[in-house]
Structure formats: structure tokens, C-alpha cells
Image (cartoon, rainbow, N blue to C red; front, side, top):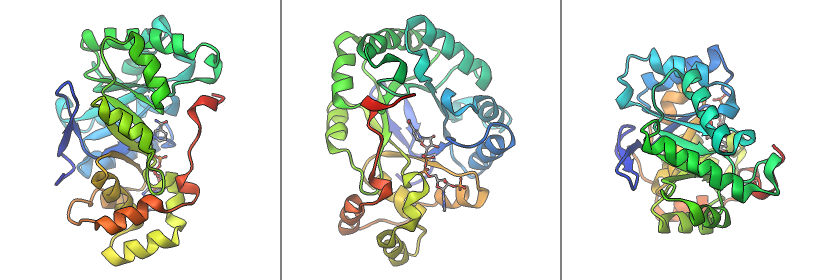
Length: 283
Ligand SMILES: NC(=O)c1ccc[n+]([C@@H]2O[C@H](COP(=O)([O-])OP(=O)(O)OC[C@H]3O[C@@H](n4cnc5c(N)ncnc54)[C@H](OP(=O)(O)O)[C@@H]3O)[C@@H](O)[C@H]2O)c1
């Protein structure tokens, strides 16, 4: 990958810009609008939101007012946990496109496999939800469909009834957190791996090991994390609400980490290398 507009290709042929802009905790209103505007001005062409973030209206407004042609932007949103099920998914999707003010979505994801409300029936709920995803895909309302936070055993169940396989799994990946089994499984099924919280949701900045690596390359820790993610073959999603950081985080295409440093980063341990167990979430 040589620039923000370079793309990975999903197994259905859809192209997806290789570095996404994250919006979790970008507050609805001025903050989310301003940060998405800054991201697009800095050259990002891939924006990641979710109904659960509560900011689809602001994200959509910034996208629509950006002056960039719709087909040059890649927009992802995600189904909220309480809305798993066939009819409820279709209703949730209608709300999302209304709030975003868009005619179609580039990628729609099931946000979590085992919502708190459906601990005892998640498998059936995901099968129904996926039927609705397939309908939206076949009717052209979404250009690609996928999942998030799914482990292999969640995917095994989904494949039992799916006619169209997920194109993406968006999971937490970053320094010290490589989820090898899930990554291997997804690659075996031609799914693209998106890496969320590639900077450990902000916790990585206190790592002494990462400070040393950043000094060695004369880059910021954020740039090291995002470069690492790309070299691992993931598609990183980087969030910031600070315009200078947004611009700087995109400058990761003109240096390369050595194999030795990639290994060191993969092995670093700390708060950043922890994750929620998707089988035991309460929301
Ligand atoms: N599917 C899921 O379940 C899921 C879960 C989590 C995240 N995601 C997606 O992935 C995106 C990224 O993950 P994330 O938001 O958890 O965390 P992240 O991108 O790893 O880190 C964001 C944090 O790092 C700070 N930051 C960013 N650039 C920086 C820099 N150059 N220097 C210093 N601090 C910097 C940000 O603060 P400032 O904003 O103040 O700059 C923010 O606190 C999300 O926004 C969301 O779109 C998906």
C-alpha cells in the first residue's frame, strides 16, 4: 500500500481504502462532524461508524457536505446489538441510512455476535439477522456485508445457514494482540481483516517499548501502530478528533518496519493487548 487511496479488494470485487477513519467516541454534533471533515480533507476515503456510536447523523452530514463524490468514499456502519433479528435488522438499517442521509452503505456489519439480550439464542438471532443482511446486499442497499468481534465458533454457526459469506471481520488487533486463530480462520474464508483500536484505544502511548521503536524510526507511536497494522495485512481503523493528529496518522506510507520490529510489536504486552470476550458482553 502506497497511499490512503490504495485499496484492498473484497472477495466480491469491491475495493476498500486501506486505512479507515474511526469515529467511536467522537461526540455527535460538532465534534464528529469536524473530525470527519478533517479526515476527508486529509485524504481519508474510508469512514467507520456504527449506530451504537450515536453519531451517524453528524458523520453523514460531514460526508455529504465534503464535496467528494459519493462513490469515492467508503462508508461502514454497524447494526446495534438489541436489533438482531430479521425485521428488526431491516428497520435498523432504514434508520441508519436515514440518519446518515445516504442512499446506500458500502459495508454493513453485525457489531457483536452475542448481544447481552440474546445470550441464550444468539445463533438463531445471527442466522435471521444474516438473512436480512443478504437481502440488503442482493437489493443493492449495501455493497458488502460482514461481521465484527466474531470468533471462529461464531462464524462456523453463521456459515451453516448463510448463502453469502461475510466479506469482512472487524476485530480488535494491534500491538501485542494478534488473535492468530481468528485471523487464520478468516483468511481461509477470504475475509478481509479490519483492525479496530490499532492504537490500543489510546493506551499504547504509555508503552516504553513503543517509544523506543518510534524514536528509532523518527515517527510517532501512532504512526508505528498504523504502519505495523498495514504490514500485518490488516486494514487499520484510526480514530482521532484532533485535526493535526488526523493528518499525521495518515502519513504511514513512506517508511517500513523491519521484520524484527514487527515481531517485537506483536509481542508487547500491556493494557493495549487485552480485549473483551465477545461471548460475555452485557450490552
Ligand atoms: N467493531 C467494534 O466493536 C469496534 C470497537 C472499537 C473501535 N472500533 C472502530 O475502530 C476505531 C478505532 O478504535 P478506537 O477509537 O478504539 O481507538 P484507537 O484508534 O486505537 O485510538 C484512539 C485514541 O488514540 C488517540 N490518538 C489518536 N491518534 C493519536 C496521536 N497521533 N497521538 C496521540 N493520541 C492519539 C485518540 O485521542 P484523540 O481523539 O483525542 O486524538 C483516542 O483517544 C473506532 O473509532 C471505531 O470506528 C470498532
